[in-house]
Image 1 (cartoon, rainbow, N blue to C red):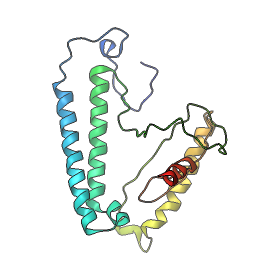
Image 2: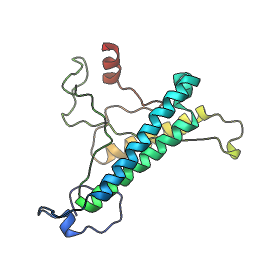
Image 3: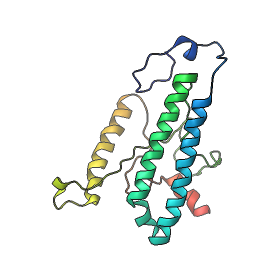
Image 4: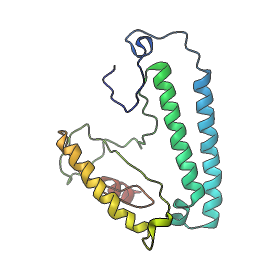
Length: 184
């Protein structure tokens, strides 16, 4: 098995995951997966434009059509990852985002290791019948408690957690992210 750990319980084929070059790969199913993902992204853009024409930004972020498409796109990304892993032995990082300004930093910020990464967990939640009078905002308390447990687990495993937070409808912005937004 490679040095990359993941949650899949699959067998690793030596040819696919080995150190020798892999030749003769038929990439047609990989291209089909990419085409399906691209079609879903186009559908997302069309839907997002329509939803924003009806609602404000915050409401649009929470629109069930948008959330459904985001979940579908996430599933398609996972399928593409699984295909690339199974067929080529790659651990493709295709869903990360980078604006290319990683070298810029805040002079007042605490020094951090050069290999700092940001990790995210997301949930798509709706009210169930047993939610009673609780609102969707009350979920933030549950997610925050879970975040504290995860952060402690990360520390217990020998890593430093520089920042963490929870939010609803948008990613948590850390100090560096806020500074970048102010510069725009």
